[in-house]
Image 1: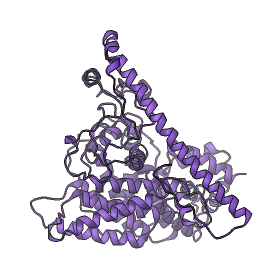
Image 2 (image 1 turned 45 degrees about the horizontal axis):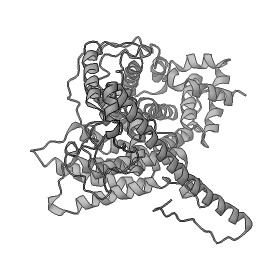
Image 3 (image 1 turned 90 degrees about the horizontal axis):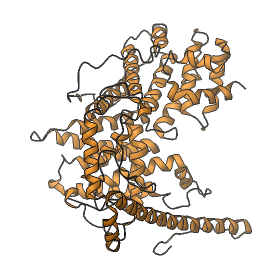
Image 4 (image 1 turned 30 degrees about the vertical axis):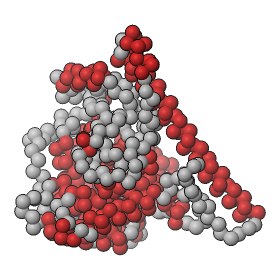
Length: 552
């Protein structure tokens, strides 16, 4: 507990119950500190054990005996590598930090030879259970490590300014959020991407903005954000509960420092755009429309100034981030995007893409058939076709039947198509209650199936769910003979409002659809929903839960 000061909130109530609650908070704090110390010891012990095992595997027995006396204490996973105030500017490759797991020259050669052997046949996709897409590791990473290790590279250089407090949020971002935000990523590709590009050359602003978004997402899921906003709740009393506020403030401070340099501001600074985009995405989680709008206005100004720099055109990744921010703000405010979809995907990928119509052959068929009875606006039909196509490509990635899954350009292609779909969903103007309900349900589907980085607690999902519930209260699907569509729309709403206050109303609507269609089993409902936008792998457990709640 040395070096850490925690303030215990006092309400002025000196009753026995208040004193008991205060003691409980103090005990919780002490237990948290002790758990942190135990974790540090586990990290040190595991790193020490891994160092010994690695030496035994890569060194002959006689050499191992001779080197025993020369062995140096290993570094701890949680140990700081530099003072937090150091300037992180510059190339991280020139400031190579010690790896979390000791890597000898023999191990490096083993990795290189393993990769060389795999290059000849690794392009041939095999089923997941055969492990054809995985390359064996010569040493296992620590289960306590905050930074993961890829299967094709050992630990790459990272910026020195990386505290224990920040590391856990970077770990969460890479291992949880990145696979959700980019469904086309495989586990290997996530970790490989984590070890290069943005994070390899990341400066202090980039790391702070990533940690801010990650900490906000964790605070939403764990309930820390609600606990912090409730004066009577004690759920936020532990280390890390307010990290989302800390890193948000740090990101804003670093942005202001860069923008305060006057005429010398580099408007083509990718880190500047990334930091502002992270703040907008944070507010897409929290629902603070005022701050999100302010950040978006600043982002538009930077984009306008960037276009005046002919010597440095805006990269596609930067432009796509700006468009994605505008789309999330439009989702929060229930308006059309303010920016046109003018970005073009010009990265060459193998064309034509292979046909995958045999995957999920009934997906979306019923929705396409019924659209003529729902609306006279046929502009929505291409959107449905694109949603179905991107769902099939995403499922092809998961089933290991798509031949370009290891290609970054294909990931960018999927991201571009998903943005284009979401932009058109927000720009589409409906004429009635039923087609509006379908539009919102499709929007929820895109954000929870094609791009799953948004939990049910996030503001973008809660706003869409609230609008869908309001629209359903005005419509009458049964009178129009659209009981199966009511079943699908209410199911999407129930899945996206699980364990929230709106779940009951959607379950009631789901029950109406079941009764009107005369469905007798969950399997029958699954077969019917599969003709709309429904994926058994994603929605199977949710359907069983909704069926049990609605059909008591």
